[in-house]
Amino acid sequence: MGPPFSPHSPQAHSIAAVFLLVLVIAAVVFLVVAAGVFYSSLRYRSRGPAATEPRQIFGSRKLEVLWTVVPLAILTGLFIVTGRAMVVIDAPQDSSRPPDIVITGRQWWWEARYPTGVVAVTATGDIHIPASRRLLALVQSWDVIHDFWAPDLARKIDAVPGLAAYIWLEADTPGIYPGTCSEFCGAQHAWMRFRVIAEPEADFEAWLTRQAQPSPEPTGIAAEGARLFRKKKCSDCHSVRGIDVTRKEGPSLAHLASRETLGGGISQNTPENLTLWLTNPQAAKPGNRMPDTPLTTDERRTLLMYLESLL
Ligand code: CUA
Image 1 (cartoon, helix red, strand yellow):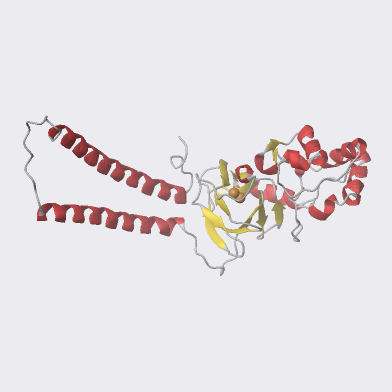
Image 2: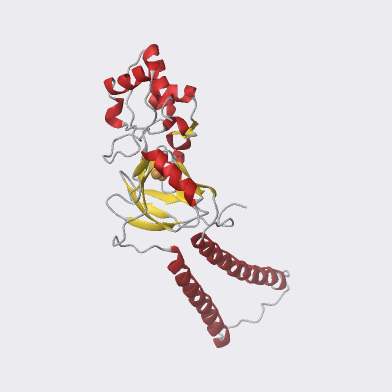
């Protein structure tokens, strides 16, 4: 079953527990009210012009007390349960401790930075984390308000420009957990997907180390493509190194060839779809910030060879 019934972290378990409790209480209240309405509409239905008016009741202390005390008890109980869950769910909102991962929402893709250990930057929509370790994630925005939400793992958190927000990011077992932007942020809000990939610690460390390393030196046509990449100013907006600390306008293309999807999940990473980005970026993902760059068919092919070499 979908979220919130497939929690995979202590935080998500707490959220699911509160959700289920509220659901059960609401269901009981609904059933009691619905039964009352059903009973009354049968018992006191119109019995024709000859029927006399039923007995009229004005005020009842017993009822007044009952429908004040019962909701008060329910809300007080939920307040306490919610407060205790928030202790588990919410990360401290101060920057005294450096974050383990910095997640930036951008129109329309997610960037993940790993400032501790090996510094790596990814813009793949795949956010790798070590399984069974609680990470302090700093969630921020580059442009407009986004919202980072991986329902199986953590609460939603708004990414607000100029504001630092923190959440715990944790998965109790290795796996792939889908997520998406859940605050409307423009034309391609729907294609701001991501996956949190939780791996055993050693695999994660190996992945991180690989991300920080450059792709193999391009040869032949790919090397020609690398020159074209700079000449056509692609490199003004796109970094191809996994460790660039300067932020660029476009997503990093480091290790592009090893990615599964392009453009926040809008298409699979195939030569055809990559070519479409080179030919007509607005057709690949309407509204995105990538300008048209006039290229000949040969130039496109050469650039494609280079992009495909970025393993
Ligand atoms: Cu970013 Cu919606």
